[in-house]
Image 1 (spheres, helix red, strand yellow):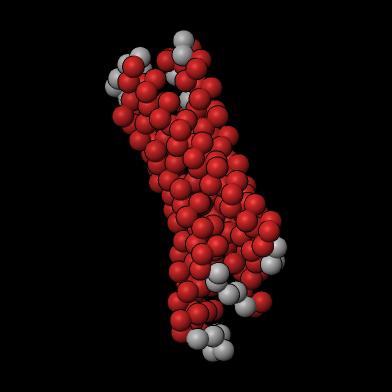
Image 2 (cartoon, rainbow, N blue to C red):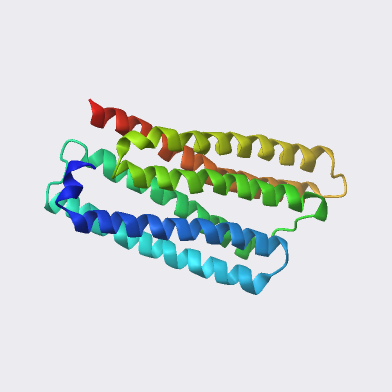
Length: 216
């Protein structure tokens, strides 16, 4: 266990709660997009409201954690790196909230021919996020175990990118019945779903770097 958390139980409890909120947000993002694709709008709206709440709670918790680090001078050599890690983790739920909000506001039309691929894209992107949170958790208790948990993050991020390219190619080369504006609109949503996996990859790289620093 990282030294500070042997004597600062409140900090580790806040960090656990912080990750709990992000994980719940990730779950509701996946359910929310699937509900949208299936036309379950009331359920989608419920998912969106939960994600908004979890994002607000996560922001409040991270402020508490930052305050504890500065007030108690926790890990002065690494505090900025650790707080930056938590901020980058917060980017994941920020992007999730923005994504669902865009579905709500812009009401994109998904042809039946592409719904399955898009649902799969969301699933892959979410897998990347779902795997990086346990890696971030274990960093605070057993940093030596982080590396093994990051391989899946990178794998799913790459799979997300590959499927996103396939979807874009399908939109522009195999769907002549769609208007150009509709193709561009769906490409826009594809890009934003990709960003969830990309944000997870950023966190994974930061975790790798931090583990090396702490060992030195």
